[in-house]
Image 1 (cartoon, helix red, strand yellow):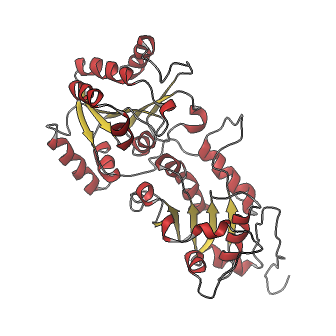
Image 2: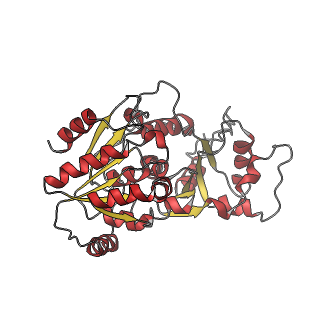
Image 3: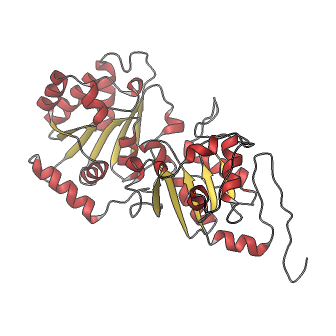
Length: 359
């Protein structure tokens, strides 16, 4: 120890993690930005927000960015802990999958430029000790000393904690620092609507003849996976009963539903409640910011509603709600493991669900 500084040798761990050399290096590092490479869809990105907030706070980072698909993450800056986003299609990230023995970079290589502003890089692409991880470590450290951590997007079989806790735990275990473990705060709103969002929602409601002061419930009957979708007739039956109780029903149909549903099915939905389709993600966000309640499957839009603080009723079939439950201050989970969950309607499940919703 000299001049009050503690020297730390450079250590490359089994996962390729590189420790900083001096106390000054650490101080310089935490003033830099963090990056999360998240190639997943809307729900995956929203469930990554607790990790982003944890990194930002515990490491005192100057900002946190997400590199992913802009159609899923473009709304996050200004509404969440994420400061900016970058398109994963804007860089040749596929080059990082090359064999490490053949991987090469040029001076001022675009890949070096893409990662040079970050002191911490967390990636959900690649695997520990993979070509991708080793090439990313090499690339990031071409311009400065950087930490690279690879996280698993899916938990191991039998895992029973929440996925967001799993991400934070992995990060802590691989960080090399004595960071305090933190359990996610399910009462927090991960996403906050702006005044412009609320105005957008009001305009959408006006277009279908509704006002913000009415008892409004959005039903989004779809999901990325058909096995996770409660049978449509269940949603229609629940909507009819809620309509009789004075609740205004708005069905929200995304691109997947418009592709899967026949014209007759869409017409049937329209006979039960108002119907909105072909909305952008920011329009959906605006609509959700103006309604009282939301019903949906395990989907990205359900995660969005919960994250906004909307009273959310999430319906889970094959996926485990203990792991994938939406994060928000007012989330009620309805889980069913029956084999016919997505295949045919069930009056028993409808009654059980209505008991929960109208309690």
